Length: 198
Image (cartoon, rainbow, N blue to C red; front, top):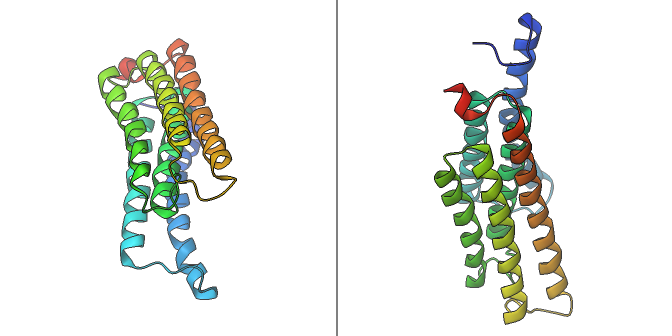
């Protein structure tokens, strides 16, 4: 069955290209550190770094592919893309440099709770737009609470700017989660949802 909004061969080809774009971008992102290592000693990745980064990229692209197959609703797809980007950046930032102090600071595990809210809420909502909107709003709240706890507890205090960094990052991630929630809400009002395709 052709995707909604596509007419003829040209539309199908364009839809196919849009589905391939994340995989092409992922391959490019995976090659970037390798190229950087040829020109600078600042980038020093080992096999584990590449395996972890590759697995994260594969997981994000796989989830996007699944969403693209489930629905032709543009708002739903955009909501999934924003949520995946937020989760990807949050995990990678914690692994690479850490949000609370360094990447070795166990306080960074608090952000696993944020991702747990997103994942468990999505499963409970069965990926329906209305439930996903509530889930992503709850994820934004969990992100805000995690940042507030880190600042109030004084975790990772390494200088005068540390609370500001956590506040800015918390606002950034909360904004992404809320944007995704808003897009899911729009998708709920839209034409084709994951439920309707079944």
